[in-house]
Length: 253
Image (cartoon, rainbow, N blue to C red; front, side):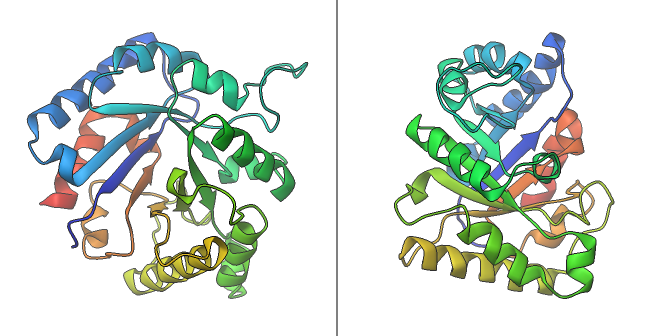
């Protein structure tokens, strides 16, 4: 395992109330007590919109960064009921935002909409976690590489600040199923993603690439020696301080 920075990003989805701050307090206490924290890994939690401002204020000078799970595809303000723009996210303390999650793609997020979300987020100095991934049918038809390349090239452009973009590979067939890709397959896929990213940004160094999909404390060790993977986007297990901390512990054990 290379000594590069690793990202552990928790996506709470539709979970959390004010007292859920206790989960973050425990994670923060663990990070604070771990001397290797600043050198080896970074923790980002994306709670629902209702908790971002409170959490961001309380953890402004602590070991956890706060982000949003999604944003609207038009920036600033507008007459869009129930929507939250990148500008609004930034103003309430978010530093990261997830864009392109399969949940949102399934609800109608096209490549054009996703590109506008990326542009608006970058314009507001938000760091982006851009999700890509194939579904079960596409995997069965051996279309994984074609699908991933299309998802990347239709949204990302050379002019975008690659330093503010992280790509999360989340195979849809893996999310919430307990199934994860074989290490050899994940290695090939991660290398391919980085190759495509280098081509898009015309650079020798690719943006970071994370893995997401049924990540938990029992399987995290299988990713330990995959240097192509720069971290993890964690769903269900991030809602428990113990499960989230155990993932980090078992990765470095």
